[in-house]
Amino acid sequence: MQADAVVIGAGVIGSCVALELSRRGVNVVCVDKHAAAGYGSTSSSSAVIRFHYSTEAGVAMSVEGARYWLDWPAHIGIEQPALAEFVRVPMLAMKTPEKPWTELMERLERMGMPFEDLTQAQLVDRFPAMDFRRFGPPARLDDTDAAFWGEPTAEHDGAVIMTEAGYITDPSLAAQNAANAAAAAGCTFVFRRSVIAIDRADDRVAGVTLDDGSAIAAPVVVNVAGPHSSVINAMAGVTADMSMPTRPMRREVFVVPAPRGVDFEADGAMIGDLDVGTYFRPERGNNVLIGSQEPDCDELEWVDDPDHYDESLDEDEYQLLVLRTARRVRELGVPPTKRGLVSLYDATEDWTPIYDRSLLDGFYLACGTSGNQFKNAPIAGHCMAELITAVEDGHDHDAEPLVVTGKYSGVQIDLGTFRRRRVLTADSASTVQG
Image (cartoon, rainbow, N blue to C red; front, side):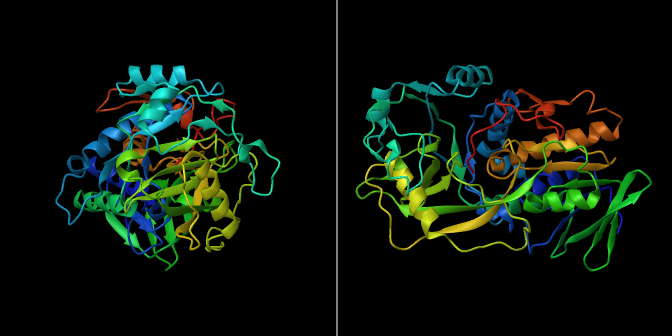
């Protein structure tokens, strides 16, 4: 098989990359080991749409990305049996002395993203089901002497509320929508096939070999393999100059009923709550979806082999995350029966993705995206298509990082923020949800 480009991975970002390239007239083949688009780690995403990041480019990308979700049918552009739905839910960013919230508000205002600046008293009045005292830093359940589990004495300074935030009800469906649109634009999808080799011709990528022995010849290959991205990068021999590599990490997400008498879907909110160590949002059926913010007291669970990891829900993790969230959500109970899922993140050390070329000409990276990039899938697809087009036309992205202008918001997205060679700094880490 011959193509102009091979996209490895048909999750929500891979499908969006395939869509954007196909709409530019590129002959794309998208390969995925699963049976359909969105069946991998995308299916486990919390699918949160929010806008607070610690970098200018991170905020810009999320602001531009939201425009795609706000009119998803128009972006997809074709009739489909069902389309992913965006549910509007306010996102609270708690104001604490440790975080530069003034800078965030300045960025949001400059980029045209509406927000509200609420005092502590206004917060309490607006969201009576939640307790806005300060509990942190988070602690483990067995740390019974920790102040976290005691009666708090301090309050937050209020919160920034992002009113155009929300979540996508079915992340897999979103990937399938993008894949269907890509197919309509000419993309060929190859499912139930794994890449076993990255082919080269001299110093350039030449395509991929699949596990059935077939090959797809192409001068461009894009690694969007999610938790398998590190395996693909090693296969391609491109890790030598990646100062920010990716690794698969095991994570759990749980769903519990909202407190009795509280309509959390109507009156609740989403919070990436560093103070209690979890993020949470409403889930349909008047439930609360809960995940971890990976606080310092918790050991990260890295996985050596993304094809083999423990997929059973852990009772201790369940108790820990729900009880932490119960510090913020009044009267939240811990049901005896666990509901949730286990999946893998594709993570970098600073929680910022890699959208970049590689040291192998023609081989591109859209990696390290799990945990906080679902929301950016459509704009990530656009940025990768712009990057590939520019580099293939001779632009030296390593020397002069490409800046992409958002076609809806007009914001400037400096792709140098997402380079593979970046250095970890105190400012580069970002809050992580969804």
